[in-house]
Structure formats: structure tokens, C-alpha cells
Length: 113
View: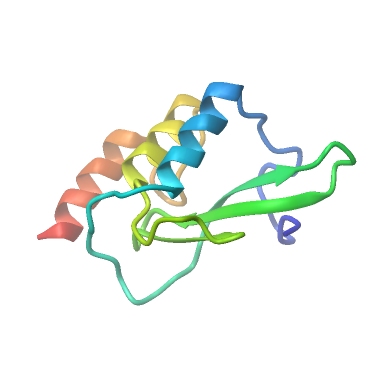
């Protein structure tokens, strides 16, 4: 996956090793099921590159509809979207139209009702 035209942060933001570990934990293993909308317009992505700077994997997320997907596919059907939101918040990155984790959490709570 290569970032789409119009991407806001063309240079990306590097993750620290512990953040990579947290991303991998969020897309693998067992996590509680949660509501998702049928729309899917991902506004955020985490792209993993090899040593030759070629993309080898990605996780894309729509924090608005609480949807996600990854390639190669993670070992979990339910990702820990709250953990992913926390990583974006730690890096001071917006989550689509949601500026921070507090806004995401309010949206998620409304969405779940």
C-alpha cells in the first residue's frame, strides 16, 4: 500500500518500537466485539516498510465508522480500536475528523448506543 493522493502527512510519522508492539497487539489476539457502521472510508493508516523502504503491510482505520482492515490480515476479527486511537493520540495525529482520543471516545460511546 502506498499512501493515496491527497494524503495530509506525506512523510508519515515513525513509530517507536513499543508503539509497533502495541499496533501488533491491537490487530492480533482476542478483543471484544464492537459496533461498526456499514460505510467504510478509512482516513488513517499505519504502513510498515522493509529495509528497502518498500511497503510490506498496512493497517487502515476509519475511526468514524469504527472499521478497519489489514494486509496481511491480522489474526483477530476484532481489533482493539481504542488502543489504535491511543497510539494516534500519543503521536498527536488526528483520527479523520476527530482531533484527539477524547473526541474519539465520545464518538465511540454515542456510536455504541
